[in-house]
Image 1 (tube, rainbow, N blue to C red):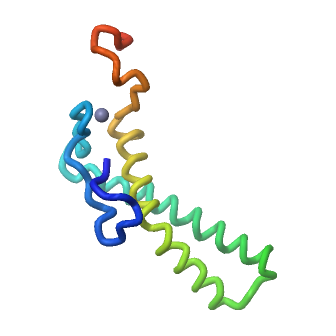
Image 2 (image 1 turned 180 degrees about the vertical axis):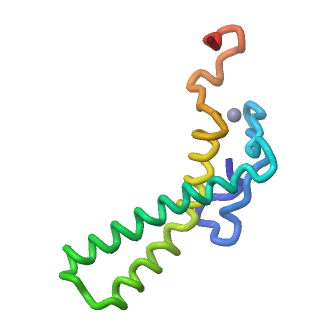
Length: 114
Ligand SMILES: [Zn+2]
């Protein structure tokens, strides 16, 4: 789906227009990925909660600045992954794009859609 690897900090968000194998469009309609912000928000809340609960129990409830710093660092470090998984999930859940494990087989051998 993406042009560059996740670790390319300045380019991780650039997407291909369509799948190089099957031609599936990666942006089914203009503004499709606005909804991915809500998926991303869900990931962020999970990161906040895991960081907070982890610090409370593993680090013995440290000072507030430790919570703030940890959540900020965790959010920045996971941002490329959150961005990509949010878009992939958006395409799966709301674009109804599914992976076909038999994509390499000729069309006449593909299972028919109901
Ligand atoms: Zn494809």
